[in-house]
Length: 171
Ligand code: ADP
Ligand code: MG
Image (cartoon, rainbow, N blue to C red; front, side, top):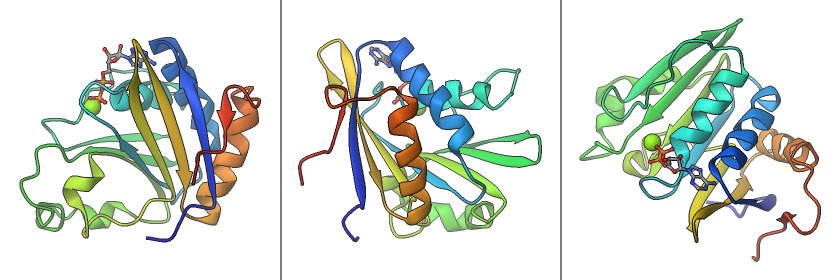
């Protein structure tokens, strides 16, 4: 995998901060974007996704896809697929389920546990890695394509980030 073009680190001291990042990211998503959400159980991947999906205008419940593997949202003309591959026993389950068809120019794909479908799930434009940090979280964002880079370049000022709250991650 090539090294990311842009990286940034956001401090998320509480759940509200995670939700705020999801809300700020929502309007920056372009059709065709693939966003990986990485981090341990309880790191905040679903919390971030839920806030993002609500900010796009979805008013119903946003369930974790842990059991269903995918939840589908059609918001305006955008197809948003929220995946969770935690329960995969092998990456080939991705292909067996036909999920490759969901990754196309008209859809945004949010993917929790992409590593469980490694080699089968298409590459990310943007990777968001959540880490526990005391009682809060830290999010490291890595852009892997020009589309992901544009998104991250817009997210940094939208988060009101300055050198103290978003900084280039160490290489
Ligand atoms: P995941 O999908 O990564 O397994 P969830 O989003 O389901 O995690 O759960 C994350 C838990 O952590 C929730 O209880 C949520 O309230 C909490 N949480 C989310 N973001 C933060 C944060 N920045 N600081 C502290 N707690 C958080
Ligand atoms: Mg989750």
